[in-house]
Image (cartoon, rainbow over all chains, first blue to last red; front, top):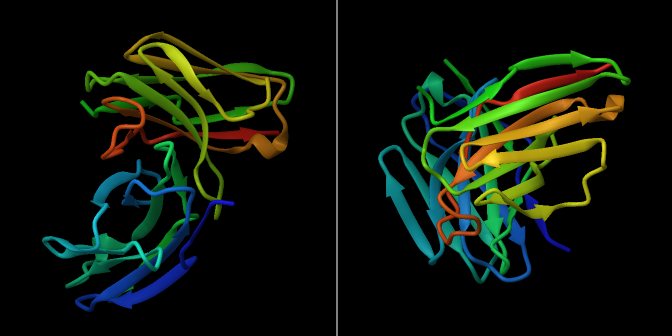
Length: 109
Length: 115
């Protein structure tokens, strides 16, 4: 079957770095997505990886290893506003998005 | 004005009621989606519409009935729901269904409570 695994909850300190991991098993693969969802708000697109390697966008970076079925989202210089849920989703061969349950990130001062 | 708007934001209904959720997108997209989001569970895709034609129906119970009168509007009609249907219902749109980049634009959701 198809499956996405990511930690349920993580805690980090303001100003620090945190890495949120995601492993996936899909029938075929057409890319890996990360979305951010603040409590009570809409999920918003953060990143898309389809080739191996690291994609950097300001304080946020996303990494993909297709051979390992693994991705991570790296958040640097954490700010209180980064407290949110982070959703990992893999696109299968039918261009269907398979979603993880999300990682709730708590930032402490 | 946000790209995707949903109304109502909150809804409480009894098991015998009939209600509807509304979604409107202002992005000129061709595909619209209904997702169910339950606490600590992955997003569940319910329905996909492309150019007003339903292209996906993921074994959703018939008590949920979608309607897409045009490419900007999407409804989810609710009838005889069960308490386990209580969840956040998210509407989303994309330029086209199954596009390679797959970026979805979500509304803020309708929080449904079934008593």
